Image (cartoon, rainbow, N blue to C red):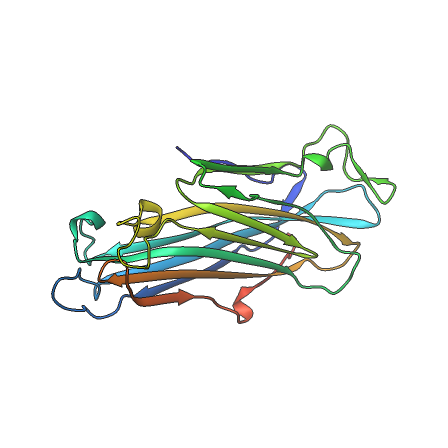
Length: 258
């Protein structure tokens, strides 16, 4: 399946700068006989997003969107070499087990509203999709029209998600996503025996939010990614875990108009 993306456009004005956050981690030194090489494996993850402001007629609220993607990847060897988990009978190389993203609105103003967000929860669907913002067109809020009639404020994405489970939790001003990737069992014998491609090769997914903020309140969010990779030796027994979970100020993103 080819990703199908409809980015915010038309009435949405993109911010001057994008949000970019990434990491690259090295695997542990080679464990020894009977296992795959891990010393030359590299683990990467990144989050990229853009904030947009709606050209709105509403005099009480401003509407903002956040649209982006989150991905991880595993490079098995340097230079990259062919890798197939089923060929290694004692152990498998690093694979990703979970990807979580926490988007926190940076305000205590109780009038702020998380208007819409996606994707929503899914269970092992071959594809995942979302479309948000359709209710902005022709709608009203606080007794006033949101945007000019006849214009569309919707956007979204569709992407392949074989054996991936999404949990979506909007809570107050914030929204959390948790993507459980298809790893292997951790009680010997591991079931299933081998991780699937989204875990041992890489996986990319898309997200979007819309917020309604009191007029002239700055739009600022904290995007906190959390990614975990594991290495099993022997198969089904976790030998090493790598984690990317930044919490510093590099995770804060503020909309600055053009």
